Length: 93
Image 1 (cartoon, helix red, strand yellow):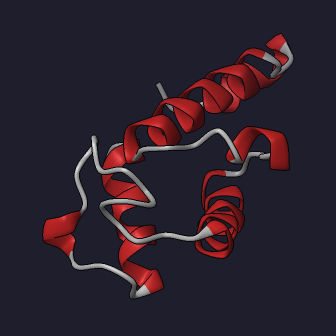
Image 2 (cartoon, rainbow, N blue to C red):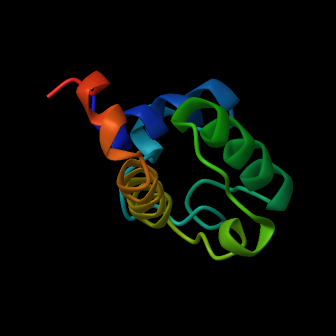
């Protein structure tokens, strides 16, 4: 399951919108009717699910589902690049 699909599942668990409303270009406030509290809740869920840290400054820039997916992918790449070389043997290739 890719990042978009995993994020879509998190959005659906919030119970705010239906699956048909969620697409990469969906605007969080206009298309999904998210307010700042909904974005904050989704951010907290994403932090736990993806194992990343997201600051208020970072999540306040999210406008679309695609923005969140790109952010999460970049955070995961950054995290993976900081793994010490000796720990790479534990990664599934």
